[in-house]
Length: 458
Image (tube, rainbow, N blue to C red; front, side, top):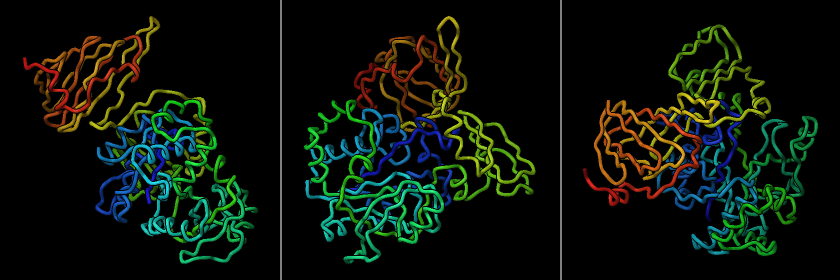
């Protein structure tokens, strides 16, 4: 069985720590068994490894998240890249063509789809591992996992079984129908019918989805699907496939499962009341501080409060009201002020757009020891790098230079450049130009050994 984790998200519900490039699954606010800060994606990948499932796993995501996944999980992770965001059916369709035409997966093999950020105990992955046998034993077209509800929630969709009788060695049930987020009274009646929370996990034989794509006239080749991707309808897999299928079974999971999609649910699972610089006085009750800024934050004598601060903004909210943030920020649009990359991370210190049309963007950048940025150039901006700490090698137009703290490097428009961190390197980058966007990058190569073949030692 192959596992595919879907990694998406717009970054609004956990603003200001999350943004369009750093969605909730990348926030390092949880704690590993060793007491090290970890993100949701790092936690899930660790659990997959603990349950011998990581070797057969892939992550499907958009281009904006690739480098952050590599930074947090590793360079060797198998990633299926969407050309653009188009909801879960297009993403899973693209995944199916990748598995079939690139990875060489047999059409008879079972594929399980999971969200990248479930907050669960290890027993959940034992249930995931049973999906393959459940699908084969039941001869169903789709096999789902449904969480046994612990209370009548209005936040989740429900899977309603045909009856309470379990079948087969795994104890699956046949599915009658689905119910989107109900009100509390409806939820109570659904639970009386032994309905299960829909946690977004399902499995199918690869051939099942390939047949659906063929019936729609869509290609089974990955490269061809990428070319047609922009024309695919933006629709969820649930609406396009699951709710139209009559032959579905569900495998109940009676264990801990939680969606950490809002600040109030996330802070319930944080090991510490405070993350980052600041003071939360002892008379604060059920109050959390998460601070990524270099300035202290003081919280005095408050209850049921969340204060979150990052380069993207500052949030102060009552915990119960925190889910409203997505609605409040609907019209709010700004460039991400913090990003993680495969080589390190950066945060925006200042951004100014002048009436004359020119822009100035200042970043503080950390390049980790042994890592390098790509060999690249820009047509619409020049850059000045001031090395704050560490030692590095820089290539400018195929000439190698060694730099250290205090050195200043000027990179005019059209100059090919790259940097390799000999030690951890911090630098200030000041961009000046007419259009300061990530799209203004022409990359020639990524690997330093490959880059070094272009240079002549000065």
